[in-house]
Length: 294
Image (tube, rainbow, N blue to C red):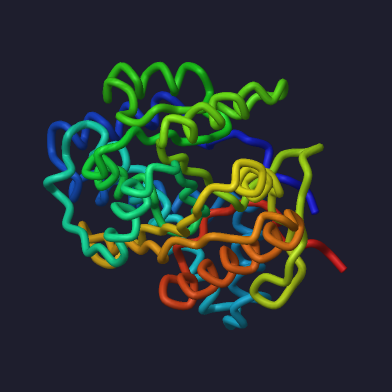
């Protein structure tokens, strides 16, 4: 199965147009512009479309016509997630409303003073609920691939002032592990997506939505190595400007057998992902060949 390549799509001009519309006319006007952009990707982005169509056809059992409709809604939902993220980062959180299921578990995790790992995936829009983390009275560290092109990254930073959370960039020399270790020692929370990997990284395989799929082993290795409690978290869009945040209860594992603990974590993460995709099937944003052939 080909892995993800660690790069975000889009260009500086595209971002600047949407940010200008957001600042001058608001979120809903940006959504109108997004309709046309979504049509473009629906018609011409076949490289990514074929993978999402496979998800709808093979994994969810949709008809071809229903899959085409879902494909357009998927591109539109993905574009909305980017717009919403930028709007919130530029001070527009008041334009959105949220329901919170399980916020108390995150407050409890902070109160334990052991640090903690929040695992999520590219299902929904976790960063749209990022301002919730500011209410937890602890430092938040987000681990990510530095996959944005530098010009786009610099432009977004100049507009948004950067992110509120501390970013830990995944590096080839594994120096990010030391930063994660220090965060846990400081009783801070670390957030990671656990559904993408790059070539050469260690993976774990599991049956996901009815077919074998590979997931990165790194997030589970980190939990087992540092013996920290874990919550699985998601933020799903339900209406035009409304999100539903979910967090599981705190999960602790018997780390005396790390392989068994890692397998249990993977099983629980994928279960939570499958449950969310049953409710929000078009909010799956992995635009590559996620499932192994044969």
